[in-house]
Length: 115
Length: 107
Image (cartoon, rainbow over all chains, first blue to last red; front, side, top):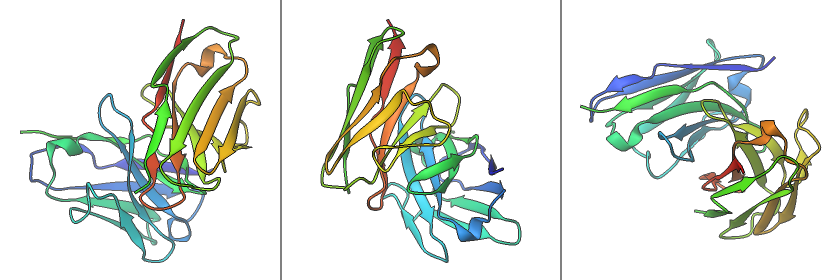
């Protein structure tokens, strides 16, 4: 059974950093395209980034240069390093396994950027 | 970037009604489109992939159609558990982009 569990969210001040984790089971993170998608409170879904099979990555313009996605095959875990956080980054962050678009989703982790 | 315009943004319907939601892409995306359902406090769930293919385990009252720039999600007979927000997503090119969502409410 495919399972994704996000962690690492919390309250952070503007300009601060946070690293989200997404622990996977039932498949290998290294062998799949993996996305991060976020949802601001009361708003719609926004795609954030993807880690391709191998080392390729792609980011939404809104986070490019501030966020970095990575994988640890030994832990079968996906990460999202978020730097220079802004209030508009406040959202629930979901990780997802892609198969012609996000298919399997985690439960999400809330990131709040506020002073 | 490809923009996805979804309509309507909300609708009220009764159990048993036929419901149609539309999504328009700013450029042709073939059939690289999915439809998702999201209930409050929950992660999205994919209903349709490749514009018209039903995800395993999804009731057959859900169907998708279209290609190129115009797409439609249809619920043939709305059930109580279908009241939710629906999103389209294009995965033809990065960045992936979602439509703005359609909230389906009880009339």
